Length: 158
Image 1 (tube, rainbow, N blue to C red):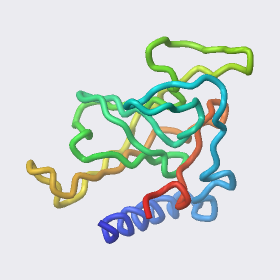
Image 2: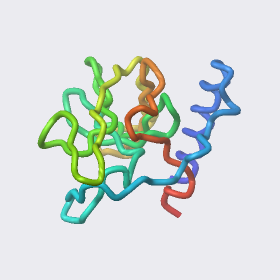
Image 3: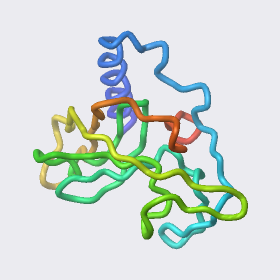
């Protein structure tokens, strides 16, 4: 698995090289969170908005999650990647009610979506879900107006 992660990192770097952005691969605020507005529940555990700002919703024929690993790339499961049109939803901290959610301590900005323009599935992915990993490139860079940010090594599994 470490080889797959390293390979994907090199792939992202090589694509970023084409754009002249290798020096900006990791954002300076990478790995920090802005938790504390309205406590929410995901999977039975309490979570606050901004506690996982790299998490995104992957929208296609299936509904999946992913991690923002650069301002344009999302790491997700290969079985979530479909041949039809796909979008990535960023900053969706309260999925039951669309729009801006406010409390006395502040407001959660409105989420937004970006279209996916490139889909990369691991070459050895199969129906048994071996090598179930892939990358999505969004048509534009994610905005810092919505409280999202890129995941860094401090947030990754050991």
